[in-house]
Amino acid sequence: MFRILVILFIVIPAVELWGLISIGKVIGGWNTVALVILSGLIGAWLAKQQGLQVLRLLQVQLSRGQMPTDALIDGALVLVGAVLLLTPGFITDLTGFLMLIPYTRMIIRHFLKKWLWSMISSGRIQIFFRR
Image (tube, rainbow, N blue to C red; front, side, top):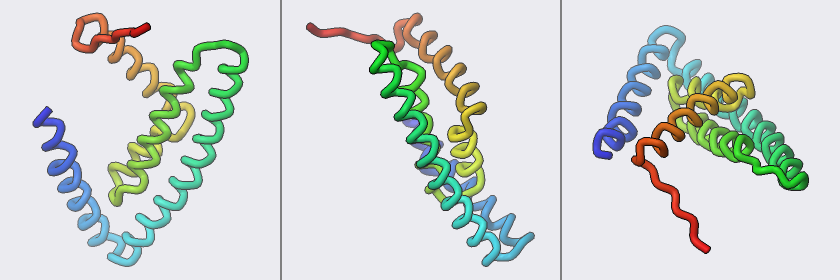
C-alpha cells in the first residue's frame, strides 16, 4: 500500500512536472499552458459524452433484466479517465484519453476483468454476500 501511495503522490507528479518543463522548453511556456487547458476542455467534453453513453447502456441493460457488469466497469473507467484529464500533465492526460475512447477502454476493461478474476481466484480479494 505504501508503494502505491509513493507512486501516486510523489513519482507521478514529479514525472508530470518534468514533462511539462521539457515540453515548455520546446514549445514555450504559454503554449504549454494552452495545451494543458485545451486537453482539459476536450477531456471534459469527451468524458461527458462517454459518461452519458455508458449511463444509457446501463439503463438499457437494467430494463432488460441483464447484469450490467461491463457498463459498470466502463462507468468506473470513464470516471477515472475524467479525473486524470483534470490533473495537469501529459502522461495523465494520455492515460485519461485512453480510458475515454471506447475501443481502448474495451481493451483496458478486458485486462482489468482478468486481473480482478485472478485476484478473486487467488483469495486476495474476497466477496461476501449478506442476506
